[in-house]
Amino acid sequence: MSANEQSSGMGTVEYIQHHLTNLCAGDCDPITHKGVGFWAWHLDTLFFSIALGTLIIVVSWRLGKNLSTDTPSGFQNFVESIVEFVGGQVKDTFPGHNPLIAPLALTIFIWVWLMNFMDLIPVDLLPVIAGFVGIHYLKAVPTTDLSTTFAMSLTVFVLIVYYNIKIKGVTGYLKMFLFHPFGKFFIPVNIVMALIEELAKPLSLGLRLFGNLFAGELVFLLIALIGGTMATGLAALFWLPLQVVLDLGWLIFHLLIITLQAFIFMVLTIVYLGMAHVDEH
Amino acid sequence: MNITVTLIGQMAAFVLLIWFVNKVLWGPLNALLTDRQKRIADGLAAAEKGKHELELSEKNAKEALHQAKLQAAEIIAQSEKRASDIVEESKTNARTEGERLITAAKSEIEQEVNRAKEQLRSQVAAIAAAGAEKILRREIDQHAHDDLFKELASQI
Image 1: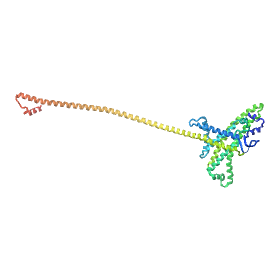
Image 2: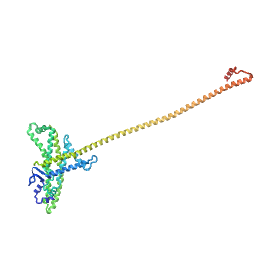
Image 3: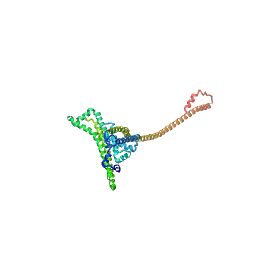
Image 4: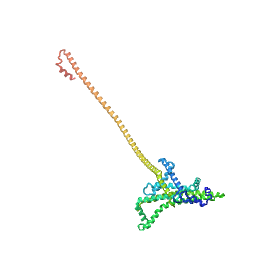
């Protein structure tokens, strides 16, 4: 495994830390390469997420140009089934009608899935390629960066607040904090509870996706370490096949996880926005 | 976690992507799917309608056939009746014509007989006159004895 060449002269801890460090520009710590101020650009995160977003746009564009009602091609069928699946989810869980919800859910599902999919690319492949062109830090999975997951969850949060105020009015929204969940005699408790409930939405959304993908990436790194650190001499005959088998197992399992996480993010977004649309008082 | 420009950038990218996906993927595909759904529903409805119409026209055709058969039978019966009528009529005509001819011939014969009688009468008168003349060998005024001759003639 390339981990061997890459991490020669590096300990296990350094190897993992190196892999989990973003390519930072701007306000960054020169030693740890972590962002320290507002102007910290995670170039790898931005690059991969925007590249995948562009991929979605370009592919959709090309597909959209030769759509056929009567004789859909293979790829159109595939995309249609995704669109119908997402549309069905929105129809089932979202009360009323809002033309923004379905495209939002579809975007989340496809984009998050593609960004998660970067996790399945061998952990050392992209950093090694980047190393050849002089980039020494690269975290290829945008969803293992809190900036990405919170960017999405905060955008959803903004939409939640916007639709809450739009549907219930400012007073209606404030009343929700005052008289929910325990009625008008427990206003201080209600404020705390409702505030926690509201803030937990973006926090859980962002942290769930980040945590799952970060942990998945870490397991891939640990599996890669089997070959990287223990495969010396004849022992490699034992450790390398083990690494391949474990890697394959985790890949298959992780394929499920990335789809599931993309799906959960999408469904929770629909549910949260649906709650914002229901005037329950 | 720090709030960094990366977060802001990702948010902007996310919002832009939602906009683009709505424009180039969700919008056209959803319109297409709705259109297809409508077409299929229309097609099924048309098929159902066509089936119904087929049944109806089959029923109509059966009825028309039945009617035509009935009419044909009626026409045949009528024409048979008409043919026998014609035969009957011509028979009657022939008979009356024959009778008429017979009557005409009879009356002609009678007329001929009468005319011959008349002729005979006048000739008898002349003969009688001539006979008388010869017998008497006298001049007799034919006019003066005309009444007598006529009486003689009528007794024939």
